[in-house]
Length: 232
Image (cartoon, rainbow, N blue to C red):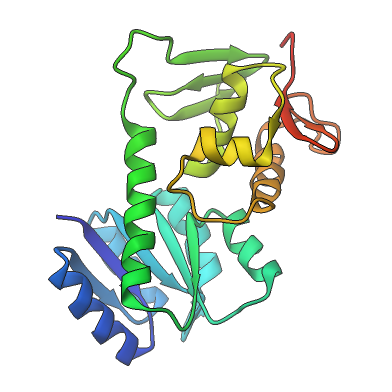
């Protein structure tokens, strides 16, 4: 049973959603504030989190950052904001998906299942005896442990950032279009716009590059997409 934490202050939506998801086989815990959510997170383990953008006692964006740092649980942001900037911001700070209000319960369920399928795909070791560790310059990438280190220091990446880095690092010099990265790194269950790849790459560079403005690992190929630097 999937253990889901829904953090939302709109009681009507929370009641409807909890009833629907429980009927679909989920275990649903509800929280109406940041403080209540933190208490649950400190005391229980969850497989998935639905997180409202604006909460009475704090920002859902700030809580999402905290979740990615401390608990690394998949997060879907729920928001009434329709501006593309806000959607990109949610992805950049580590949300795995976002859904704009109002939404239907069946669409919500489909989105949750898509993210969970993606997480399962990335977390399962390859059945074939292929390498699962890659050394690229100062970076060490372990596919099985789901870790990235640089000069011995671990770098916290979101699942999307890790998947993109892993795909690129496995094939130095190969040029990927954004659509190819979406397909080969994230899979056909990924729900997002082609240009959101740019946001994830920008955030990834901030974490792994000495100088994100002049990257040596993840390089832009103008007019096409991205590649991993060769000879590292």
